[in-house]
Image 1 (tube, rainbow, N blue to C red):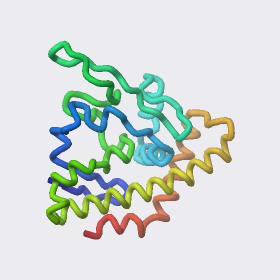
Image 2 (cartoon, rainbow, N blue to C red):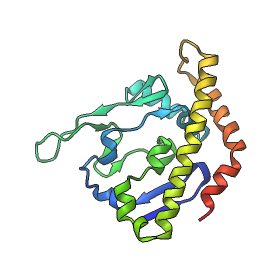
Image 3 (spheres, helix red, strand yellow):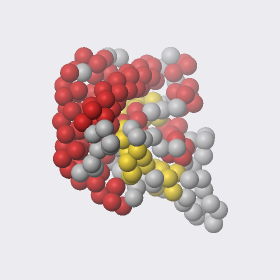
Length: 191
């Protein structure tokens, strides 16, 4: 079953299949997405600058060419067997961080298997709406990442200084983009 939690650019798409992922115990979290420029701006805009800096200090996030990269760790299974590497924020019950601190992809991505088993192929309106929301968010955040990447490169050609001032700037830029994208996020509400 697919369920939408509509909130404009903060929309979340849920699938019951994710809880019992056929790809294994870590599912998508075996290869976590980057926390890209728009994600960082979104997290800062929602009050998470200190959290980002804390996670960088802890080594769970590190600077990358397109934002921040999430550490992958090798957890030990309860039966003594090693499990595949996974996102440092993946715990026994799934993601250990709240949605407002996650990369947007982690909030809206649902794999094709989940959509197929969630009713999209049978014409379920919630599944179709979930697919439209996911597609719209991929386009929206992709455009924002490109624009923010150009601004970061212009302002910091040798790479940004990862401090409060840079994060505050990125949060303001995200807010500017979000304010101009009202029509795009309105499309997420259309079912």
